[in-house]
Image (cartoon, rainbow, N blue to C red; front, side, top):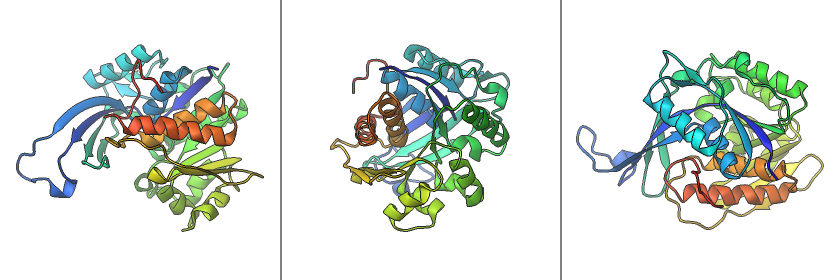
Amino acid sequence: MSIKVLCIGDLMLDVVAQIPTSPHGLHLGNDTRTIISTHGGGAGGNVASWLAVLGNDVTMVGRCGDDAAGAAITAEFDSLGISYGQIVKPGLHTGVVICLVDPSGERTMLADNGANAGLEVVDLPSLDGVDAVYLTGYAPLAPLSRPGVLAMVQAVNAAKIPITFDPATVGGMKDVPVEEILSWCAQMDTLIMNEEEAIYLSGSSDIESALDFFLDYAPRAIIKRGSQGAIGRQQGGEIVSIAAKTTEVIDTTGAGDSFAAGFIDAFRSGSNFAEAIERATAVAAHCVAIVGARGRVGTQI
């Protein structure tokens, strides 16, 4: 069953360097041989791409520049059938992330937000027929985008469309009071975060207690645990624990984004909560087994 999903968030060009050691082991001031490739990136764009690969009708709300990187992003969206409206902003440069990926698949990111800053409520397209909305925390965490993005959230809530929200990284959250971020969580239908983010926002070192904490803000919450899978709970329900899928880990970039896409695809298509988390882990397992954060045309899951 195909659903119509609106993804709100950042669009980036990822420059992925598969380095032969950890970043600490690089020969600073000298040369290091590595494998480098470029891919579409940004949490919002990644979720949109995986949702499209899974067969859904997807529209992207974001911003990129009128440069070669922006052209690459829109070309990738065209190939996947993703709608994107007026996302190209003349005179601005597209956001770029340099991803250093070590032999274990762990990634270290250097980010330039570029054109992503400055999202406005006028960037929100018609909500007619939209079944679900995904919002990445990178969007409201950007000071220039915050008013516009929160106005979008109000409009989506007024239309009674469920929002799945990923608060994004702890590093990005440290410039915003926790109470303010929690006020955003209270406007969402589903919260998806990793362990570090859950502990940071809840103040609890116990994952199950953190899960209960978030149910005071939203109807359902999910905490991703990497190789240990994920746990989730709905208000009034029992804790669901799903093991991670066994796979060869090549690049963890985009793992959380693919997880969110898999959950939205399954849950909004009629799967129950546990089945949707199971589907999310399967999509994430596919993501970490490839280089880059996005599914591609022809990807089979």
